[in-house]
Length: 128
Image (cartoon, rainbow, N blue to C red; front, side, top):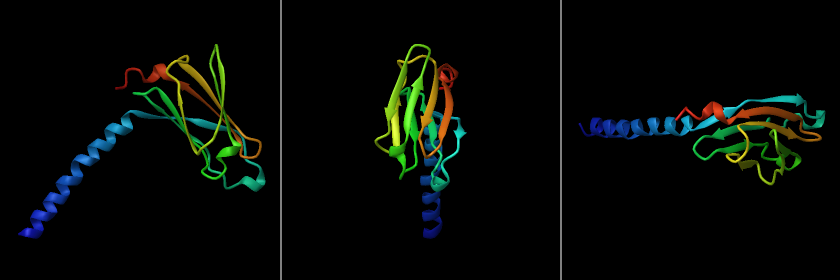
């Protein structure tokens, strides 16, 4: 009887956490990046960057290769501005709420490849 009670308590304690993680993921949207040039042959094991847009904070998060992050430069381009970021860590968080709705993302490197993506902030305004 005690084993069944403990099992039920454990199952119920995990159940709400499943819904909580879904709510967090609904706030974070994937930004598709495509490769415009491949890494140099000696850098073949470099992880491709991943970009996410957090709706509630209007923040663009870019996750770079944890070892080779210093090789990347991130360029955000809009109709009226162009901003360069030099990666100082493997995860770069950039506030983009004050920029235009459509932001072109260029991630450049001499050896690790180059990547391009477009973030349309207005596409996410009615999703939460």
